[in-house]
Length: 133
Image 1: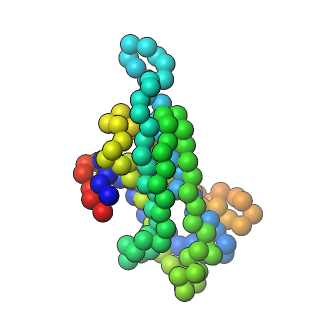
Image 2: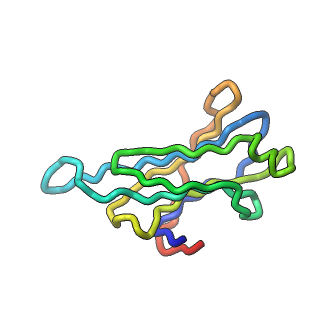
C-alpha cells in the first residue's frame, strides 16, 4: 500500500490490562471563498499496530469524511496472544494515496488503564511523501 502521509507513535509496552487507541480526526476543509465545509472527497485511512520488530499485529482500513473521526484499539490480551507477557509495540496511521490531496488528519495514541483512566495522549509524528509497504 502506498501512503501520501504516515504518522508514527513511539514504542510502548502494554501491561496490566491496558488498551492502546489510535485516534484519527479528519479535519474539516474550509474554502477561502466560503467559510463552510467543502464537499471534499473522503480520506482513506489505514490504522496499524506493529511489534518492536516491525511485524504487523493487526490493521484496518477506514473511510473518514472531513470532520469525522475513528478509533482503533489494541488490548494487552491481544499482545499476550502473541505468546509473551509484554511486547513493545507501536502504532501507525497512513493516509492512502487514493485520498484527495486536501485530506488533512490529526492522529494520536492514547493509553488507558483497566479502570478507564487515560494514562497518556500523544500526538503521532508525521512523515510526508510517498511511502510503500
